Every structure is written in C-alpha cells, then in structure tokens.
Length: 147
Image (tube, rainbow, N blue to C red):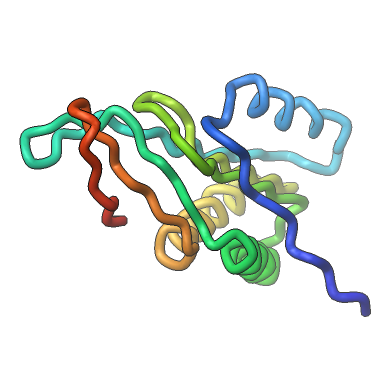
C-alpha cells in the first residue's frame, strides 16, 4: 500500500467565512453523509497582565506539524466511523475575532461527529507543534500558553 503524504493544513492569515462556507458546500453531493460537525477556533481579546490581546501571530515547524496533524487525522479515522475530515490552521497574524482553526468532520451518523470532533480538537491542542505569540494593544507580545 502506498503511504500517503501529509497534506498542508496551513493557511496564511485568518480563515475566512467564505472558505468555511465553500468547504461545507462541497459536501452536499456526498449523499452517504448524514451529519457534519465543525469547530471554529477564534482569537479572543483576553486581558493578560492588564493588557488586551489584539491578535495572535502563529508559527509552526510546518513539516513536523503537518505530520502531527496527519497522525491525529489517521488516529481519528481508526477510532471513529467518519466519511471525511478537514483540518485548517492559520499561520501569521490573526486578529481578535477572526478564525484561526477550522475542523470539519462528516459521518453517516450524528453521534459520531460529536465524539470525533472533540477528540480531534483536544489532540490538536495537546500535540500539534503550532505556537502563538499574543500581540497586545501596546504592540508588546508574549508567547501563548495552551490551556
């Protein structure tokens, strides 16, 4: 069996609502699908040390990160009866209020998509080598700690 090459999950800047909508629309012809579930990670304007976050600048070791995303994807397909899955993560600056992570899972049955989506998102947060530098209103910055 031929080994699949990991896909590039990264998109420069914020993930637009048009991109998300088009991704969903492409699945309307796949009539074996009975349920979809999506996760949209959005940059929050949190207050940290008395300063408001205005953006996050994302970086990654892209080859290593794409391999990890691929491993998470394959493990999810082994564990859950999914028809398809798409993962997209931002690189570069994403302003507060914009989307930085888009995960989309599909299955013949609805219960599976809820369980699979939580599994994928938690694995990404725990294991993907993607780093965010929080940019504050005064233009200072601090590396983000995932929680």
